[in-house]
Length: 108
View 1: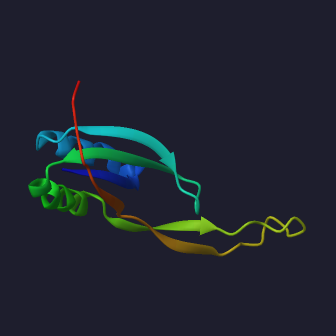
View 2 (view 1 turned 60 degrees about the vertical axis):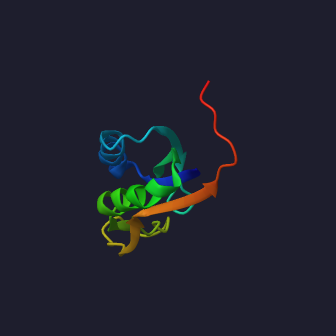
């Protein structure tokens, strides 16, 4: 058995949770936040039989796509508001999956 910690964007959480539950996976949802953009994330915790890990990873890959997101540069205090500040774009989304061996699992 494996324990999967999956960090995804909040935008993808509902669709992925539905897909996982439709396929018989039990999931625990935890709210989390990222360090770079300080944006809300969702961390999913799943106990998965070894032979079904690839099935979970396929579902995650189909639903959790990367996307570009603008990151406004901070305004300098003495600049006039009529001056446009350029926006940089960063790639966000996808998923970070940590797969850990489980020595023992019991449901009580």
